[in-house]
Amino acid sequence: MAPFFSAINTIGEEEKTMLRRLTGLACATFLVGASAPSTITLGEIESQDAMALKARLLPPDLAAKVVEGSVQRWFSPTVVFYAVYRAPARAAAPDVCRRTDYLVRLEGAQSGEDKAEAQTQLAIKAPRAFEIAAVRLPETGADTQVCNAQAGYVSLRKPQTLAGYRALVAAMRAAAAPGQLPFAITCEPEEEAVCRTPRVALAQVPLDALFRIELGHYEHDVNFGWHLRHVPDEVLARGGYDAEAMFGATGEDGKSWRIILRQGDGALPDVVMRRAEIIYH
Image 1: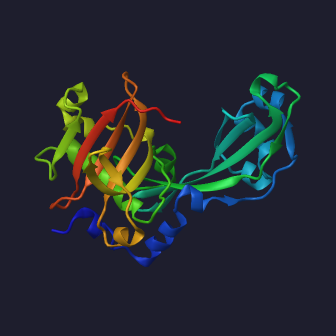
Image 2: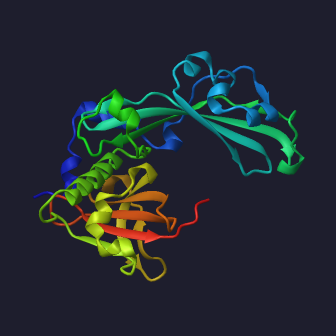
Image 3: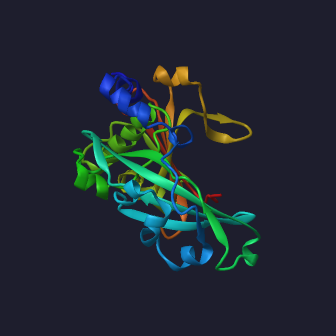
């Protein structure tokens, strides 16, 4: 039987068109028009929530459609905030949800956060749109209602990323189902309590903490140990790659999951689960 990644790469033209639109953040961002007014004060940002500010930060057509938002201060020599707004999710394929997020950068010329005052003026940059997607779990069908509740949206940085995501979801479904697993599974480090029952851990991986899926070859070297090495696009096009799902910190220990989906001889890839304390920048 063909490995999962090779088989799933055979897709129709309609889905290929959809996948080309769901490329990575660096390539799939685009400006969606200038907002007015062009500035806002620091006091206004700090005293109101994102949805109360949407009419100030977004063009009218976008402000009318977004359903959720947040504002976060960014560590920077200047005063910087990012406002993120979410449009309603929608079904893009029978098992795929899609969503557009809008990012607005707010920046003041004041040097040093400790010197910023309520009247500090922040420039409102034009919104950028980001296309992101998620594979449905545990249900297999996608519609507007379930897609709005779905967790685990990520940027499909390359077309083959969707195959890696589907492999992750298929492995989680298999782990939750009765019977023998159709793939090998290991969990590291073995002394971790959750690694004593790796099948249960895989079935319960929190998709709401998933933030990226990378593609490449999972290999070992003397300097870095086991790691994912990126490979050229032509290798990905042939289906010769592994995938790594990256998660944020979860659980009482605050550690993070890295789940490697490694090509084997079966219909589904083998799974390597690694749990570690990771510092995010």
